[in-house]
Image (cartoon, rainbow, N blue to C red; front, side, top):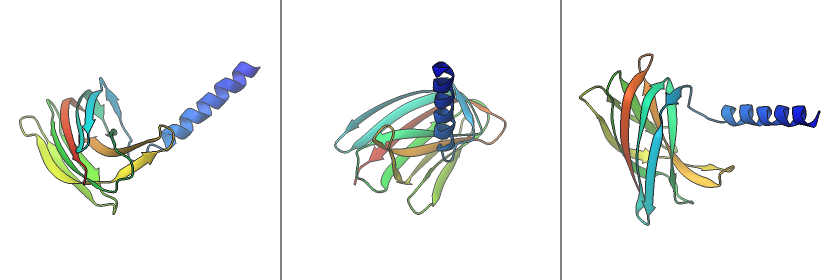
Length: 145
């Protein structure tokens, strides 16, 4: 009986955690990300083999910051991907990547806090405009004020 209760609690926690994933209503396959940080900011590079819908990718930053400058460049092999960040006022800055035409923009991005991981992060969103997109590669350069 205790195993069933533990399973039920773990399932409930998973559902609650997923419900807290604001802004994402999609899925990704073959995701990878590598980040490095210094006193001036954080640089990340990553990729998705395939995305469907909208996927948010958290870029960890130093704590206690408000909006930070975020430079994003993303490319796609097939499909169309809208890439965007949201600032603390809710304003969204975006660019579209298509095969041979990368998305490339800079904007202020809101720093959020994840109480479970005890980390501050900026979300960069990737939205497949069609059913799915494949071969997405990105770089994100976050500059601290």
